Image 1: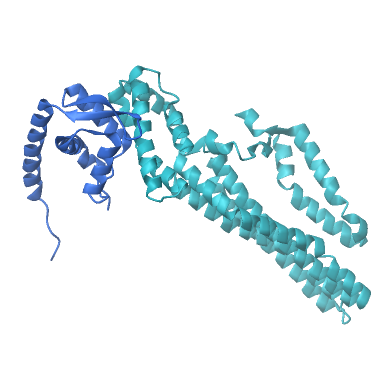
Image 2 (image 1 turned 45 degrees about the vertical axis):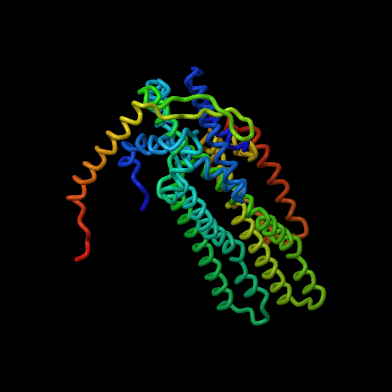
Length: 111
Length: 331
């Protein structure tokens, strides 16, 4: 069973911000880290990733700056801002609450 | 990598050229290139890597808000909704159905060609009798009935796919790639099938000539004709099935937009706007076959009656040239 993109949509930003907390990064690296960290359970679409970047940049959670790849190609890097870190912590709290609420209604079908 | 670049170009082809859009295109292109390069370095084949990258690209819809082109996308979507999307499963099902029912209708044709065998054997047998002839005629009528039933049944079942020809349809990039791969991988077997059927056609006279020269009795001649008919029928069956499969690929690929249809020769497709001509042309080759068999059996002028085939081909091309309209001209 694949992951539902409807459910995860609200937390794409959180996932990306979490990875940017470690170090600044660029588009594909983030997408790869998401894939490896979730053991291929969640593969983020390029368009989803890009729209998340632009949205968060507009909201001031991340900043983009031009950088260079190993082969000398230009690449857009993203780093997290202070307001981004605050937003990330808020989202973490929100998730814990959400998870607790939903947990109450998840029944293991053992019997 | 070119395929990916073309794909991205085609996705963005209809969008306005604002700085935001151009930036998005560059960024997405960069991400796709990175992913492609990594997949290649992991040892994936070019095809696999392209398919993965394209299937994981996502939907341009999501960029609507990011690029400030939401209105534009919505408007576009209303136009696009008129076009029926054919999914990969549907395409596969279509090819499967096509193979299945072309085999059935091919069998129908097979029966039609061998149907006079009973009569021939009864007529040339040394024990020729009315009973034997009656059995032969029964055999003939039964096979004709089977032929008509098979043809009618398979064209009825295939008619559920008529929308592929009548409505504007399209297939997505991944599906087109899959079909293209399939087409390429079956290419050699199709060439083989064609070669076998041509060989059968070329050699089907040999047993008849051989039997006639070596044995010379009318029973042997009858048996020779029967073998001839069986070989010709088998050749037609193989040819029908393989041509139908190829046509299936062509029809599907012609829906796939510019990238794949270019290499297919969809220009050969001709339609007729006059209903009478359309009806006549839909039964053209079966009619010619019947004429050929009837004339040949009535006159036994096998040595000359083959002339019907080239004449028929010329007539068909004439009709095509006079009444036919190329498909693209309509669209």
